Image (cartoon, rainbow over all chains, first blue to last red; front, side, top):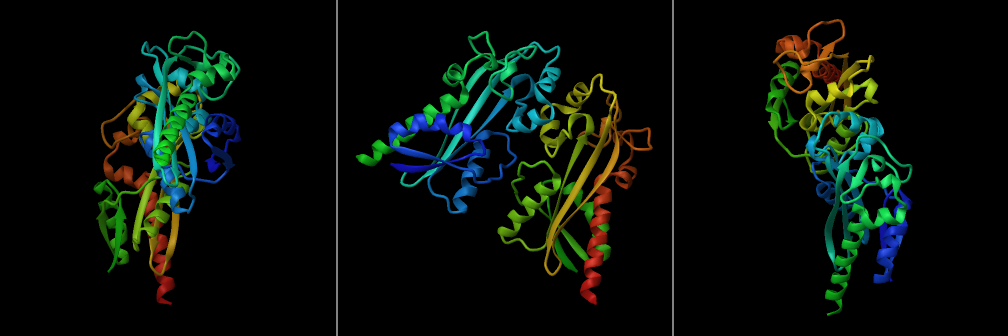
Length: 191
Length: 191
């Protein structure tokens, strides 16, 4: 087993990472290491900044992720600052900003970055497209889940069970994509 | 003369720093060094993060500043992300978020941080209190100037000349406060 530290303040993410990465031979452990996210326009820049910072601190095998909601009509706002904006304005603020706007297109993005010995450092990003509805619906999940309906669906993330959401969601997709990259890397190793 | 680098991408700030610091024996030079601002809730944390980063890079005598608009009714939003929020939502977004709100209290904050040989590293912060009006007024200045009226005044920053604004403004006050700190430090040196 290769030990891999998941850097997060939210141990709830552990289960999702474990179920994707353990079959590949990784033992995922939770490491609540503090890291300063930088201000930038894209999640990739934020995640790369975190990876660089942790490498400089001497950490060796680790993975972390960052997510955000990007709304077309608002020029990508709240983007990389989604969690700050949720704390200050909430879903209500987003609904107010979109009052009277017909373009409701939005996407959730998730970027995962890692540094792993012999595989180097890389990021993967995946997204779920969808739309912002006109009111809050549902009680599951967290954050902007009550106002986001993924493409082709009628229910918000907050109206879905965790499994259904993980199947569709940006983080679920990003974790799968990350696992595929790791699997490729390990194949390269074995050759 | 002691050489002091002003780290900024906006050379327009140079004049204001020079007029306050040259009388104290500092030669202020513009250094457009890139620095990653971190995500944090206060300007002090952002500025301290920048100072630490530049020191780690080997810079010795430098000063930098960061400003933000903090709106009471919006839990401090847009705060340290004021410039990102201005680029995405503009003044119009702020007015929309405050529609129907009677509490219009807001403050502009400016934090200045420095690292200077023999004086060490410190920050000063000053603020101007005021209120967000219901529409945009005036063409001077930049950013949120058209919607902010400082306490005790009737005109927005964007309706004032540069000199009048500098007299009242958070940055003007912070530069003065910073100059006082420097003057004290130099007195300490001479004793």
